[in-house]
Image 1 (cartoon, rainbow over the protein chains, first blue to last red):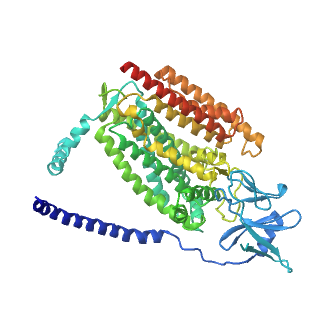
Image 2 (image 1 turned 90 degrees about the vertical axis):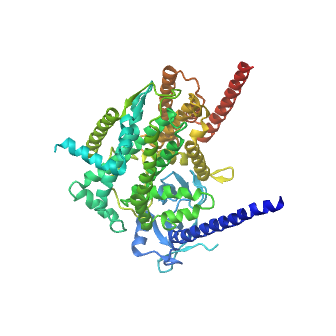
Image 3 (image 1 turned 120 degrees about the horizontal axis):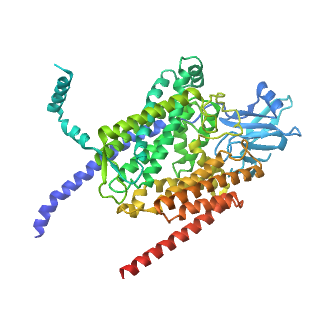
Amino acid sequence: MEEKALTTSHPNTRRHFLDLLLGASALAWLASVAYPIIRYLKPLPQTGATGPTHLTREEAGKLELNKFVIVPVSGQRVIVLQAPDQQLFAFSAKCTHEGCTITYQPGQSQLWCPCHDGRFDLTGRVLSGPPPQPLAKFTAQRQPDGAIVISELKA
Amino acid sequence: MNDHAKKRGVMAWLDRRYQISPLFEFLRHKEVPLGSHWMGWYYLGGVTMFFFIVQIITGVLLLMYYQPGEATAYESIHFLTTKVPFGWLIRSLHSWSAHLMIVALLLHMFSTMMLKAYRPPREVTWVSGYFLFLLTLGFGFSGYLLPWNKLAYFATTVGTNIVVSVPWLGDWLLQVLRGGPDVTINTLYRFFAGHVVILPLAFVGIIGLHLLLIQRQGMAPPIEARVAPRGMKFFPSFALRDLLLWLACLMALLTLAVFLPYGPGIPGMDWELGDKADPLAPAYPGIKPEWYFLWEYQLLKEFPPHLFGLEGPQICLFLIGILLGIWAIIPWLDRKAYVNKPSPEFSDFGWGAILFLTYLTLKGWDIGAGGPAEDPAALQNIARVCAWWTLGAGAVVILFRIVRYQHSWFWLSGAALLQVALHGLLHLSYLRAGVIAGAIAFVAVVATYLMESRARQRSAG
């Protein structure tokens, strides 16, 4: 009885083992096809200038005219604005709700995202609307020579 | 040799090699079930396909001039519409046909749902149609970015940001979709590949399955009819009617495309090229997605920043995911239709969904205000006007269902209307109104089922 069970189960175990081997190698094959594709699709980290950014003359002109300007700083969109008391502020221009580019409303001293009506005050805090987080802050400084330098806030 | 004999000769030649006569035999016997329901619903799938064919033809023509690229995408579309003979017409046809395809698809999907055509043995047909619906939305979304104008830029920013809410994979997905952390020209390259290669391949594959299943099983007869009482011959009766309708659709499409080349000019249905995309320009007031995404846009607006310790947008998108998931597995949820019994509950679910979407869409459209409104009084006014329109439409639908189908189950469409009334007329917040209406509907549905099952037990006992 035991011998019979052994003879019938023996080919089964061998088959089972081969199936397992085949399945595992099929999986390994799939993984080796998928891995390069997954790596290929993931974009490279952005390269470009990092660190403090000087406003160009054109950007400074826009700031003077519209009371705000949006500039790239370390690969991010940054809104630089001039409050009525001439103080400079800089925030990430990316709304924390769905990532639209915000704008500055000088009359109300508010930052406003027109996409879903989110409002922020001049410290970046949410005043109203759906944004879940305050805006990320940057520093904006006027140099003695009049140039404006924007840099990331050190944590 | 005359024409007839030659034709027969070719057929015989093919038949000897490929045995095609059973196929012709099948087509000769193919019938469309007739019943108490309106035949018009059976044509909507064909109409959707007609507009899809127009999309392929006009899309290939647009490809001959379109050049994706930072300095060329916008410029090539501008050149196409201003300089190329009939370029404006091809673009107009492509845009109009896209919108009409979505209209036809929505009508087709909701009518299939109301007629319970998803019941066995056609569950896979429903699911394949569901994926075609998602792919069509993908077509609309990806095609929108290609002209690289300002509106497209922000619509794509918001639209792609949605994937961040996917647990674990969110950030990776966002990067893969955008080709970087933000929407840039790399996003356009990826969307271009998706719009003209990946989506069409997937679509054609699934539509092949969808059509094969329909040919294999025929169209669904009305519920409770084991066999259709009588049928209409597919060839030539139904096919000729189909063809006539396609011609009518073509004429309507041409008329619209010629006389309104940039769309009807209502928000979400307007394809004026406008300004070129500028990542360093702020979004502008009154920015709206296409009309078929307006409900989602509005729902995102209704959610507060935080809820139950999670971020509002995340919960909102989770909720949308659940609703879309339910929609996909309806054939298995509807137990009555499963055994070929009428299921007014699921008709009501369909109507509830339509009323829910209608209210959000109307509100997203700022119906009741001259333009985009921001101050609370104007927003309340919009909520009220849209509420009256939705309640009116809901009353008409319920009355029609009582008179025409003797339906008496209205808990879900009732809940949708109650939410609209509480929010629009009594100024409760949209979510609070939704929770109250949902809770009442939940209690009512459970109570109805308990009463029904007790009545069944009593009659069995």
